[in-house]
Image (cartoon, rainbow, N blue to C red):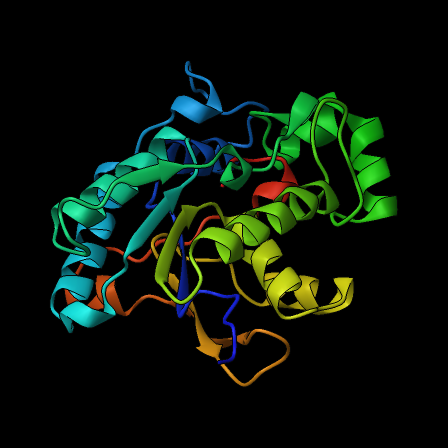
Length: 255
C-alpha cells in the first residue's frame, strides 16, 4: 500500500485584523514615524473587526460538511493568531474538544530595529536600512536583530516536516501571519523569488482569508500538496464581516 506523507488538506489562514493593523494604518495616514502601540508585537490583540472575521470564518466551516472541518489546529503563539483560532473553534469551525497547538515557528517575521516603524519612519530614522533593503530586496534583506524572508522560509521548512511526520492524511489548519502564508506558498509550490514576489505585489493577503491545499495521493513519493484556492474571503462576505487587507509587513510595519 502506498504511504502518504502529507495532510489530506492543509488550510493556511492569516489572523483577523489586529489593533496593530488599525494603529499602523492611522500612523501611515498621519505620516508619523512610529506606530503608537504600548505592547510588544506578540501581545497585540484582534480589533473588533478582526473578532467578527474570525467568527465568520468559524461559521463558514460549521455550515459545511462535518467531514470537511479541520482535525488539527496549529497556531502562531502571538495573541492575535491565538484569538483567531479560539474564535474559529468557538463558532463551530471544528469540534470543540480539538486543542489549539502553538508553534513558535509560525510566528510573525521578526523586524528587529525596524519593529514598530512606518515606511516613513524607516526612511527618516533608519536611512541606511532603507537603502540596503532597496538594494537587496525584501527577500534577502535582514534588518539588524530581525529576519529576511529566507530566514522565515528556513523555519517553515521544519514546520512542514513536522506536519508530514505527525499529521499525514489528516485535515490541518494553520493560523498565522501574512508573510508566513506567502513563504508557505514559496516552499510548497517550489517557486522562485520572482514568482512569489509577483504574487505579493498583486494583492495583500486578506485577514482571515483561506489558502487551501489538497492532497494528490498519486503525486511524487508519498503524495503531493496541490493548491486548491488562495486568499479566499468568502466567509467574511457571506456574513457581511469587513474584508481588510494590510500592507506587506516586510515594509517595516506589522502585518
